[in-house]
Image 1 (cartoon, helix red, strand yellow):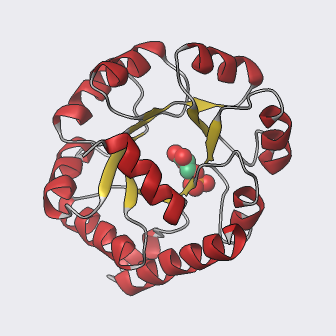
Image 2 (cartoon, helix red, strand yellow):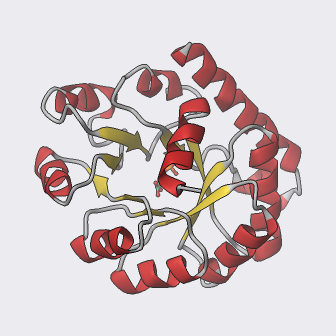
Image 3 (cartoon, rainbow, N blue to C red):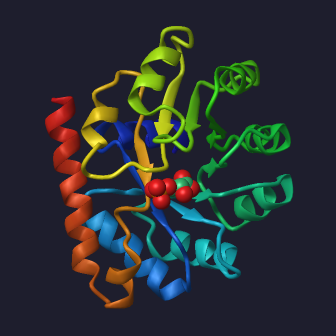
Length: 215
Ligand code: 3PG
């Protein structure tokens, strides 16, 4: 399976990438299953907890129907670790060339975060055509994406940071938005209450918004 082709295919169907904050493997697996159940099968497990890389490996093994990426990858070392753990794509909050180069050498799709035209231009010159746009709401939101789209015509963005069910359609209405990312689909309270149905429902709501916006 060409992971890049499959990733783009799934994002075309359901252009939303939920963040999974892996407190422990069991909840990360249950969260990922709940998201898949709701129609979102591309998830980003973020490196924000001590056990994150280990949890990522467990999620990859336990939920093969999901495409599991690693997010908040800050260094080349972390990129190597997540690749070894089975991450199928890599997301960073910013643009760091060694992370990009390592991912490219492993044929792993990589989405470094950009918030300005200079960063987007640098990423473009590294051969990238799909970028995270972060933090989306503070970096100018849909208006900024529209403006930047007029110069980076062959680039698609993944806005993340401040995206929610309330503004998802505003982003997905733009043709240069590949998908939106966010943590609104995996609320801490739902996980603490063992309420995975709530996560499935949020995923299904996002799928419905996307279908309405892009039909
Ligand atoms: C990210 O890592 O992309 C952001 O922290 C997600 O932002 P959100 O919590 O506003 O969705």
